[in-house]
Length: 267
Length: 338
Ligand SMILES: Nc1ncnc2c1ncn2[C@@H]1O[C@H](COP(=O)(O)OP(=O)(O)OP(=O)(O)O)[C@@H](O)[C@H]1O
Ligand SMILES: [Mg+2]
Image 1 (tube, each protein chain N blue to C red):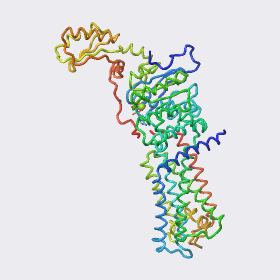
Image 2 (image 1 turned 180 degrees about the vertical axis):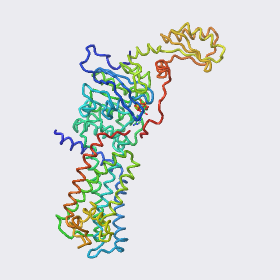
Image 3 (image 1 turned 60 degrees about the horizontal axis):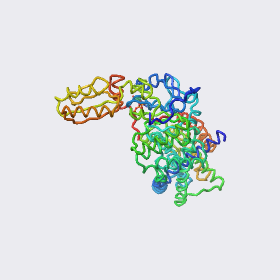
Image 4 (image 1 turned 45 degrees about the horizontal axis):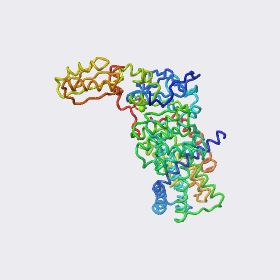
């Protein structure tokens, strides 16, 4: 078998191992789906009545933002999983085996992607129940979800780098998440960037989260019009920019986290 | 030696030793975990790395198992440099670290199958070997339970089985018998013994002189990152003085009489511990010495609190070799692993 073939097989063996944990600890899954359901309901009924954005149903407008935020936070569990393996010496065991060097990370990011996928399915059903609809066509609807998952997967690699750097579950539990609050709130996820002061507006318009959210809205037909969409280049090319962001994140953090893994030692 | 696992050194010197270590240095801040260690383990033999807490045993094993990079020096497995070609080395080794590293949500069977698959043994072969090893390590009954429910010793055994899955030619076991009950300990040595007879090279660490004596062809005594003594168990025991006969008395007044009796049965000068009311002397033939001592002490009407023949412990080795007891140099250096 080729090196790439082994990388795929080893990655799958580790993915299965990670999924087994979800199977044996179903509470984990129950609680990771309750949170997004809660989010959809709270945003739809609490903010949905309070915030108005010209020319669009705010509940529908919100959905892409909630999806993106949830997927970004969902990807952060990658750091906890890896820090846990590191702390328990499982990574030491793996590193003494002649397995592919990317397998532990590929396995972890893949199982977290599947986990995220399930959460998104639950959220979508929930969204449909509160009135969210895709107004375009099947192809663009699917393209939206594909973009969302690709983004989540890329975020997992950032998270992997963090997990291997902090080396402890306790630290990963905060270090993996805190930076996501400014990242997701300083964007168009829940408001229009047009409502922000000029310099915050610039930051929010160029925020990768904004590009993903706007791309999803465009693909699903949930977008606001005119200045409410955002400003300048990011508002005009959200899909292209999103794809670029995803590729850029992968290009930096995939090799970085693999290099970290190769040097990772539990102590 | 009766309990020895391998047939001793091969008569024809191997071209390259299975494990070679040259002037290995590893620094943690200002602590020299290893300070210029040299080792050579011929194919098919067992090396016992003996040392107290913090001596550098685990550091040495982790470097050999490609988990740590040394600061200087060289280490090679069957001629392959561990720092430069780690992936090649990993194909030849099996490791069981000091702390059992098993996945707690997988069953024992699943853990071993996973390891087999990551050694690229294939699905069928991995399953067959997993089942066989679980049987050998007395874990068949618990094979299909998540290891979260295992006792400490069961986890330890599963971790040891993990080192054997791929039948690697070189095996590292870091304090393999710690936490095992006597039955499991014997079982482990049976299994390992089979492998060694088939030509496997084994490096094991231990804190017990007796264990190293029983199992190793060669012993290296490690202290603060350097080898302070090396040789066959018999050579080392020769230097330490072998077994000691110790007598504890009820009345302190008897000590002088006991010392003179023991001088007669022992092979050296007796040492007297006034506080502990004990006298000790090195002996050559334990049974003859003990019989003779009891006869004479009884005749002299000495009231005994205790009498025993003791094998030299790590502490004796250290007292003899370094003049200081085997104590940890630094405290708090051990990582708090689960
Ligand atoms: N990650 C680390 N950071 C700092 N110091 C370390 C680290 N790992 C080991 N040391 C130090 O290196 C020295 C050797 O440690 P090592 O774990 O190799 O000892 P050992 O012989 O295996 O001891 P034990 O019998 O307790 O397992 C000790 O002084 C220890 O404190
Ligand atoms: Mg140790």
